[in-house]
Image 1 (cartoon, one colour):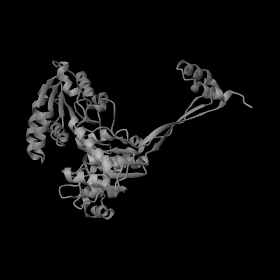
Image 2 (cartoon, one colour; image 1 turned 90 degrees about the vertical axis):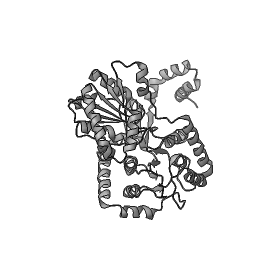
Image 3 (cartoon, helix red, strand yellow; image 1 turned 180 degrees about the vertical axis):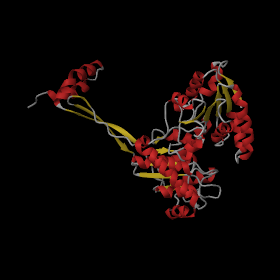
Image 4 (cartoon, helix red, strand yellow; image 1 turned 30 degrees about the vertical axis):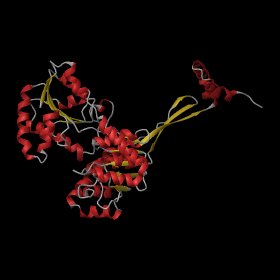
Length: 430
């Protein structure tokens, strides 16, 4: 892992940490846009051709997983897995129910009513990564808030594995939640199909869910024609620790998100240099116990860093500037420090708060901003599955009270039709 000393760092030293992006490179964006265009014009055959070329399709070529196959998957999954899914569903639903927006009526002045009203989207597509690994938890995180919001139609797209099968637990999760359809399609072709529709795949109003760089690039390509959530970069973590922390627990949190992929950044931040070596020694001891040891070693070597800060103020400034997807805090005053972290997808405070608890079972959403976008955006929420509108009602007296204001400003802008729209209402006509 690289080392960065904030006390001696120049702006150039900080730049790679603070200016990272979730947007894929130009080659991937160009390739994804091409696939999207092919799907838009070619429909089902183009999706099937892309599945064959890039992977993710069923052996039989069907794009929609048959309903009886989804039901059977639930029957065949081990009971303890079903129990875990149901427990996670209960907590996710409980955490998201209070997020449902409430209409906001407001009388700005006598006779001038400006209400904010919220409505759920009509249809949503939830992308669930698959192929080499399965992520049923991502299905839960996308479908449940959409259901809480009241979305009428919720469909799922997830690529099949090398044997041409969509993961059984993913299908079981879809069955438990009653998803309207599951499509065996992945990558850019899935995003294109959901955005524009095909003979089989239903066009949706919005697409959510994490995915590869190709999925992210495809979302950027359809943006404007179809709403999307944030572009998702590699999973990332920033872990703040001091010498009071258990080095093995800190090491486990350092490793937790890095196992998602070799491009996943992880930073260990501390004001106490003596806290570093025990953590790194614990990392070295824990690595051989993990199935993704090779991926973890590459992630730590290429994208891991130890950040030394002169004081806690510098820790907070760096953390909020970095704006991590996950921020774990292992310090003597963890709760107080956690209050000062204002730019992070999820903050995990203290010894008993592992990142993986939030990934699966606390009920908090694990679809989070990456690449520094947490400076301006938050986790996927119920509000992301609907839209606000303004409803304005004026009485004669209310309009009269702002008649002069509207007329003056409209005239100043040279928009006389705007002024007329007010004045004509007060004219007396035969």
